Length: 126
Image (cartoon, rainbow, N blue to C red; front, side, top):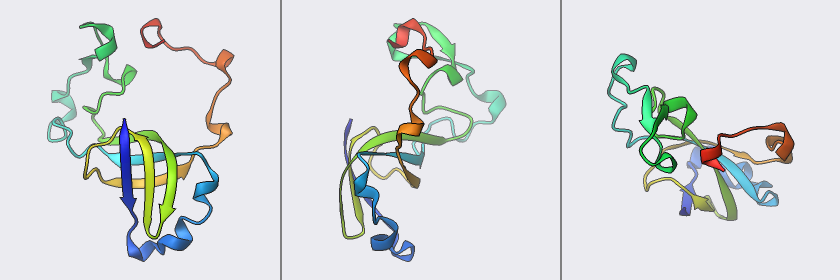
């Protein structure tokens, strides 16, 4: 994971739109998987099973993974808010490639988390 600088469009009035965001430690970043090599394929041609890196070659359903090769090329990621300077938001722990179109930013709140005893994940993800 790396660092990122998101430059806000001037028509959004960045100084007002970003006001208060640095009071949060993290934010959700909603983006477009613009480098998705399957974006041009129809849903019928999309692979329903993928090989997740942590599964050492085993395949699982694409919706059980975080693969960028999806029928809908919208992604969601959590990032650390480092600072706001002018019309730019500086983030770290980002997993996006340079030039990724960002659709929206939302603050990450405790309501977004689940207590550890209320959810399950497969063994291969732990």
